[in-house]
Length: 171
Image (cartoon, rainbow, N blue to C red; front, side):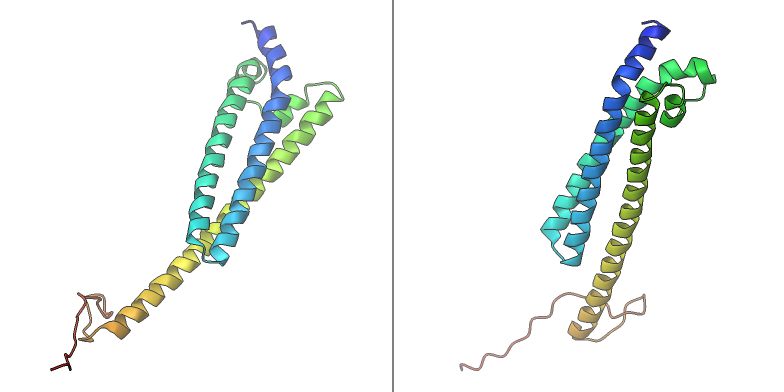
């Protein structure tokens, strides 16, 4: 394939790749929102489903990013040397209205990427907070249920084996 063929392919396929990347990021954001709702309602099945969906969407984005890099990388290298051009830089080499359309897609995608990162951070903090809370509850429960009331090496009441005690009053 010649450089011209690569360039023609780039301009024919790039808008579609960007649109698919935008859709994949929007789907990822929806999964992150479901994850937040599941955490807030302590829905372990919902959390599991959200994590699986997030993983699926992250893989889709990764695949689309590889497709974009393969598409953008080859015709852009002669223009910039060895550095891969950004979509915005490539768009600025095109006449209007194509330039404006590509720049709009690039801005939308950049905004979505930033939102995904921000939402992932929120979910990570919420998950960490719930985990810390659960550890505290487990510590409180183990200290209340410890028959011996002894402390482990960490200075906390150690949860040991279950002690079963009972009294048969039938006889």
